[in-house]
Length: 100
Image (cartoon, rainbow, N blue to C red; front, side, top):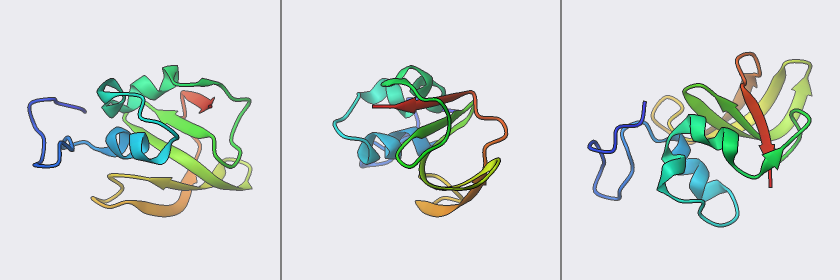
């Protein structure tokens, strides 16, 4: 979970998926979006996963690159095993789908 008192020299919080998503979307929505769950209030609601749509989970946020099948997407996200990774991800547990 995001803790504003724990940041690296570049301002990246210890839980940094939201921070990385701020870099992946057009424009910077602000530091409140370092917290993954806050992405549920970004942009406007999307009907579900599609390329470019943001998937919000209680403790993680990712951007859909491609829909692979029912319940699975190829996604890019930060702080995925301590790196920015593109990999298949289950959509189970998604609490919001958001788009610009």
